[in-house]
Image (tube, rainbow, N blue to C red; front, side, top):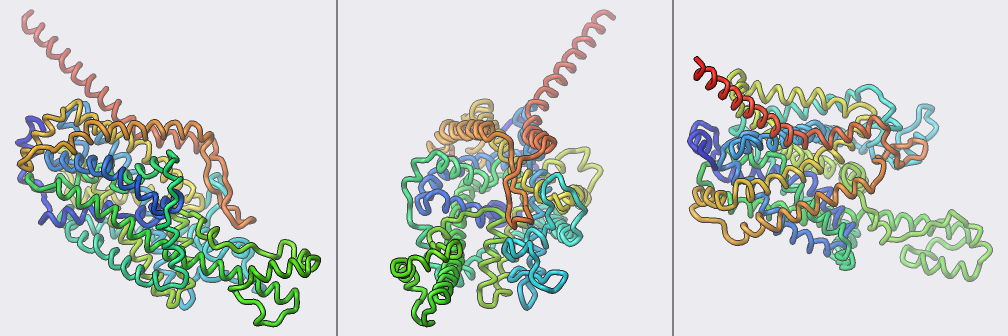
Length: 607
């Protein structure tokens, strides 16, 4: 992209993928992550089931694929990590790469904690009775633990056994040793995966990119054969077209595409930098984008079949409790009332015995299958509570638990490879680091640094800090980073120069689709998303989080304390500030150099 092609664009000494398939699998392993399993199904549930696919696919075409293509092109042309690539385009843009590295570092700190939780659940799956299947006995051996009775066994196991969570972010506590050891194991595995850089990563992705699909297929076969699964699948594909009139539906579709593909982190630039110069990244960008979106839809079918089973199980359990209540209250024969005619008998008994029926009061539950299906859960609540609750009711539940958490681990580890490489590649491109450190040493130091800071997430209040990083550590900065990227490529570097670079690599120029999307549609959509995020943040008032109340056995909305709000501001600003500060530093440095040259010239003339 500039005169430095001799040292960057055609650097033969740089490590490369063994073949194009390794690169594609690395991108798939990175892009297809936990968000496909726990975020996309939630959005489908919230925004009209099958109707959500309309804005989702449109945003894929208008925003996702073009930006994915652009980042691959930059990485392959420059053959450098994010810092070096943007600095090569313009010395003032090195901060764009630094912002990507900072954002990826934040992600590395907390993302591997999810893998630690997966290890924890996996290790606890090898028991005759799953520990989240029933409440533990209290210390007096007189009954279940009260907190578990107020909540559910799956909630108790997650919040108390797994996290040992405090009542608020202000209540600190010691490190959960079990979680700390699981986190250590997760980072050791990540280090072993990247120990030799792209050479070892290229081998690992054959497994991390493909095995989750095998587990998903197995789960699909099992899911659709579960009682009530069809109710969940129908719910997913029944469109509620009125949701398309809501702006949040379109905005959430755009943000899901944006973050699912991993744009702005620098991982795609780093991956593409190890390609051969004439690799066909255009075809690969389309393939990976389609695979990623297809996986989201496929995983949603699996998830909604499990949803249907869980909702039907809860609905029929509710009907059974009502049936028994009516039989005992009205002294009816056992076979008088069945699950199929419970609602008929409720109406009949209310008509014939109104006073006795009224005495039931609050003991008579309202059973509603649609309400069960409408209960939307995302993130860790879906992955570690809802799924666990469904798994415990399956035959041979231990087997399904082991398979599920192995799949979560591989999805998480695959994404972690991209996150860590986004940090390591730009650092290894810096001469003063590569001169004094080997690849193994640098990789080890980065993993150790992330492990030590990540231990904070294993404390009793660690989950609240995890939530803070997850909510505020990346969204704002990534929108800003990618907006700067696309404006830089199209309007500062120039779309015509970018087109020539693409022609140099692929042998043909950009077609009209890429030009229109990159120069017009994508920047407009990014600006709209960026403005919406800022307005939504301001209108949202004081930031809040879900604090676990053990007395109530549920989470309650709580405002962040002032110091936590200040930390949120730091998270939002820290990575973004890299862009203007680096540009200012470069400007001052050039100005000082120019002044020094003028002074030396004057001194020479005077002499």
